[in-house]
Image (cartoon, rainbow over all chains, first blue to last red; front, side):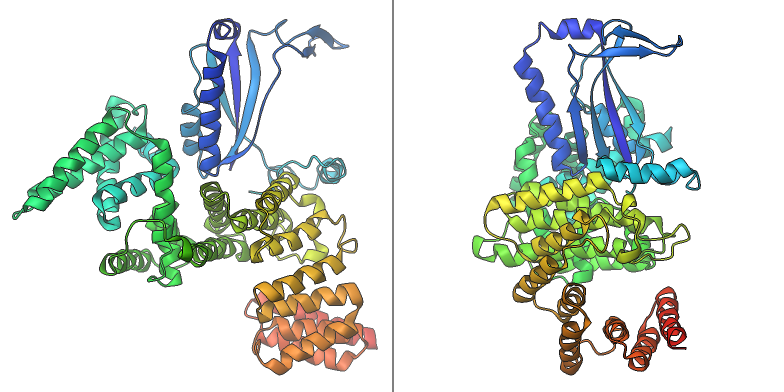
Length: 142
Length: 420
């Protein structure tokens, strides 16, 4: 099973982190990543830039575009990992070991697999082809 | 509540089990005792964690508790001689150190490698090596391993107990083998992991969930191994081979579990991200700079398939060369047969038939259904229909799997129909 660990920080946590030793943050994150790699569970992970982004809000038609990510939302999506574990509890245990502090949240979501969708839907069938053409195939097996 | 606690403990065990058993084996000097006291510590965790909360470093907690149980065990012995007492005092100091953040992850990681070598020690037969690797390194329960290998739990239990006794009787020490033995011992480890992977891979029926899980477990253990011995190209080659093979899982069977051959697979269903990981692993193997070994070569063949947009686009000439390299490094009649099949794709059925006929003459694959199957295929393409039919029907007779049998009979019938 694959899980995505989504890192969220509040504005307050971002502010507080500015006073923290950046090197220490990088080191503890690096050690966490290393432990995921050494356990053979890490498949992917990225951090997201804080300063560039925007929000498209579908409350109105046409959608309203505003500067973000600071503009409209209190909780920021600042990075993610994708891990492969044998159980949900194992993913939970890894999540708990993430070196994050107060003001931070980790949202854990199972990555859905292609098999879960109705395979007879023509767009599900087309999608597989598109993904191959684009080279961005979604993980379809485990 | 207890269920939740058990699940939490199970999760910790899957993540840290190998490290805990490895650390304990180093301190108590006996794999069997290490496993035993680790089990006691797990039981205590299931009772205590729901009340006291999961400790900040669960692995260190479990190791410290298990070490104390080992000391208790020695103390309870009636005739406790001076040597044991001394040993126990030393261990007690160790146990206290664990409580004071003495858990040194680097040291513990180093311990996992000797544990893997111990589980794959040559005094054990292959079945025992596989069972022990999954048990002590993978952290699978005996029930899970038994289910994966389709044997009763009691049988698997016995196999594991006997394996541990064999290790103790042979006085196998907990250490990384000396440098000169390294290549042969490591290749046994690769062999065990690949066998575990194939046990999951070959079971394409899709009913036994545990078996595809087994491939995933073999892949996880291989990734761990590759991190432990990053300077060994074959460790990365093995990871690459498994990633690339596993990337085809979703395309290998129909929804009802019918096998789909490579030529007919919907390549859009191949896992592109997994292929990318496989290619990265293969590049790491090459970066070591000591050439490709048998796993690296097989991974390179898998790479050719992964890079081909369609079956027809496959670079068969390159695959022929890779099989020839593999014939040099790891000769086997099955490799010869695969080589012949690749030759038929690259250069046509006639030269391939010569290779297959040599194989038939050698008698090495007698009784292996894929030999007449490939031969029948080639004869069919050469227009020697009657001979082809005979071979295909012979292959069907030899095939153990009912679904494979049916496919071969259908091919033979198709040849007859094309005649008329």
